[in-house]
Length: 262
Length: 213
Image (cartoon, rainbow over all chains, first blue to last red; front, side):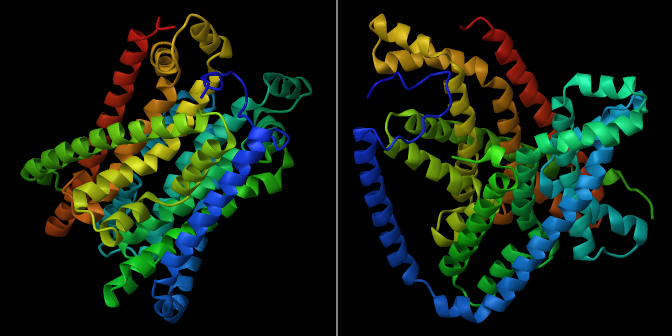
């Protein structure tokens, strides 16, 4: 083992099939993968697939709820996130500090706690409990908007300064510059970070477990409470999350070939 | 509707106890996550395709499954007790992200550093611990700060295994008094305090190691 590959200021070494050592290692790798898959297949075949088949409508319903929740919260979060990012860059100092305080507070607090804020405070004002669906949408939107605000701000900061200067020179107002010049370019730059936030949002939906909305994860655990089969159900849950999030992470390469992953 | 803030005083012991448990879980999770992350990053930096693919596969699997699912899997399927399941789950979850931080840190150290150390006759472990690690410490402090804050945030999911940490206590207070917003407000402030202390500690570390080239 040479230490030279450690600590090189170069991009990740890519697989080079023309090299004899890489060819040999690729063969070993695929044999290893085949062994692991065979072992996994043997383990998976021992699970209670009849049960999974029987409860699959419930799981599917939960999965749809999770997906919908992700889409709605990211879409709304994008709207509020743009607002927060614009406020963060405004010339009016109180607005700037307010936006910063909100973003940083939400980002430094556990997501469960944000869900609790909404779910515990609402009854005090309204006198009755919030429906789990509304509570989940509101709290997940709050979380997504704070994270997306940072993503958008990063995108905006990556646009060269000369762009906004040129826009000012040709007579665009500040809001026109923001909407017509900065935002479109920022959107392109922030694509990878946006996809990461999308994946995080999908994973965060598993936390609405706590307020009783039946998303994918809660559906599985409710079924587990009724017909006790944790190995089967939680394995299925893990595999479904893995496949969904992995597919989402490949989305970035599809949307913009510039970010094609190796 | 009226806001009754005296609940915070009545339940101060529960909240303080929760804070202590959260700190314990977080510190252990940080240590475990950093250790695992370093191991994975080292495997990934090893020459050859096999080790690299192994590490990347591990990272992809770990990053694409929610921490809650991992913790439940460890607890219900593999049969760990609540504390072990929570800690191992947190450590594994964060190791996927921490190993990425360390990998990019290792890559940003100029290749000449390693080559020079090897020419001077340092062995591989010596090169790693006396040349690369000191630079790594300094380079990775800013991204590591956010990783560690992430561990503190994720520590709240061990409440599902009934470990009495801050979020669990908050929910308990809501169940007992229906005034959970008080507890949630205090808990938020405490979490913010922890996050601020972590970034202050990391800034101090950065100041201490500023010359460690």
